[in-house]
Image 1 (cartoon, rainbow, N blue to C red):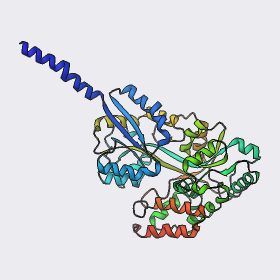
Image 2: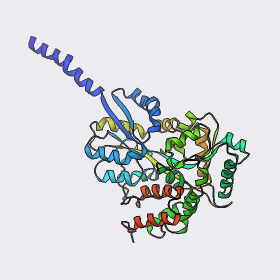
Image 3: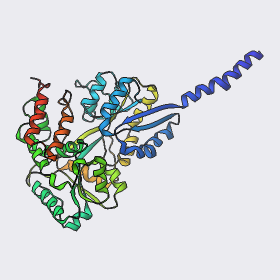
Image 4: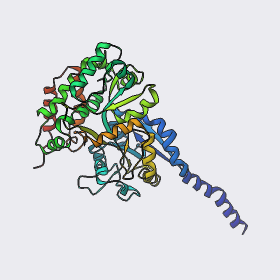
Amino acid sequence: MTRILKGMLFATTVLAPAGMASAQTAQLTIESWRNDDLSIWQEKIIPAFQAKNPGIKVTFAPMAPTEYNSAVNAKLEAGTAGDLITCRPFDLSLAMFQKGQLASLNDLPGISNFSDVAKSAWTTDDGKTTFCVPMASVIHGFIYNKKAFEEAGVKVPKTEDEFFAVLEKFKKDGNYIPLAMGTKDQWEAATMGYYNIGPNDWKGEEGRKALIAGKEKLTDPQWVEPYKTLARWKPYLGDGFEAQTYPDSQNLFTLGRAAIYPAGSWEIAPFKAQADFEMGAFPPPVRKAGDTCYISDHNDIGLGLNAKGKNPEAAKKFLAWVASPEFAELYANALPGFFSLNSTAVKMNDALAQEFVSWRQDCKTTIRPSAAIVGRGQPNLDLEMWRVSANVINGTETPDQAAAETQKGLDSWYKPAK
């Protein structure tokens, strides 16, 4: 009996606590490209989850946006990636799922909180399997310094002619760099340049779907015109813009040295934290007054489950929380400019975020043209558009050359379905 009691005592004092300790220390790592959001995840989002789930420790581990695609793929292939993978929209994440790197989330509690449209960026072509929880969309446009506009006596431009007249006024005055954008990192030239203004020319979804169907080509006028507009930006970007990085551009604007920032709505939170002046926003100017306006309202970010992660049950618990209305409201207000894709209505407190989202009432929405289907091959259309957009702005490539180059690359592997 003594031996039995001693054995029971050993089990309760040693074995049980060890098991409990194991259950209480599930470690989750979130791979992400959103390095701007590190403090928000550490101070707001993760604490909200851990308050209700003290047995799960979550670490947000972002890397540079330009390195993310290749780096996270290398980690997944090596088996060293975190349990939770922040998902780019459409083809890049679909490729991960097809390789068996991301798990199906069809049975995840809360996945029904999202419409088919919201899930479309992270669902297989046949619509049968969703592999990332939709988190947010972002809207492209321009953020401007209201103080600068008042000093220069200019109004928010609605047409392209008005836009360039405003830029010219700032250039002549010399008090502000008219446009804060560099081309060193390349991706801004397409993401905040070509993808931002282009939908007004290729008519949003009409043009994007026609490109996929093979009914339009990147050498058609409506796809070349945005490059011609980008080429006109060069005189207004300030000295040395070719060597200017993304953080450089952000700093120029938030320090009050530039008047206008070609933007995605994801800039709202960091800009609000850094700038000491009031900001406004306007959508991409149309060619002429009365034209239908189009905006890029892009399913941007989701969160998936590493199919070979070490803590799948804890990771699923976190993902179920990400799929909840509680997370939707927390995320949308912690990161104003990331617009919830949850079917539950979310009240946003930020005026600048409300300004961006208000454009949905007047403009037709679309997504980035390289995101779905035509971005699956090599050379990768998205990366090619980054490069040629930067070249066009730099003046090292003409708009026609840029269009011909991207179409040639697309033709080398993509054959539209008949």
